[in-house]
Length: 293
Image (cartoon, rainbow, N blue to C red; front, side, top):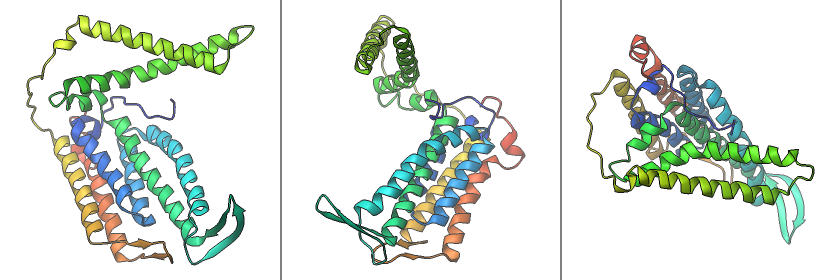
């Protein structure tokens, strides 16, 4: 659980903005990782995530998400050249495994590395979202759409750490016994405890009238300067990313031969992504009115 970023209220522009706008800002950075394979563009998006994390005071949480993403990225980088042998540049001529010849090509290796870098960008952006956007405010947005789904999500985000602590304590208690039970027995005990806790929570919610709750009234709240800044930044990042993908800026071709353009188009796209990502945290206006964040 220590690798998973958790939200804590901090005095920053991203924390002070509306939850929906903060989530849009983080998801716009993740969109870059989903649309592009060029290493320069992906490096710019990752730099934007790190800069935003440091500016909002959640640099450690972003580092935790990077530690979580690196093994996944390494797995993608290693598996791709082993299972996909397309490409004209042969690096290693392997033998046959289960009736299939395993050859490692330069193109498959580069494609795997770029795929791993995309995973890092997406996980880091979602880690920033988890650390800098209030999950309760984010779930509150869905109350008018589906009240019970929002309540279920809120309970799940609160109960997962509790159940993890229960399972850890059961494991510690099991190791203190002279003849410790098996791992399946401890897992069954933890599952039974989780079900008992779920029944207790459901009964408590029913007693308090949550079963009869309806759609809440709409509440209008004026926009703050941080709402405007984050909204403009997220819109600019998403627009630049979509426009660049539509115009085929910074193309990368891995099969059958490796072709990667490193020119003014890729440099301009990277700069166009970095500038709006840093804009909400620059200037005096970024430090005013963040006490509630």
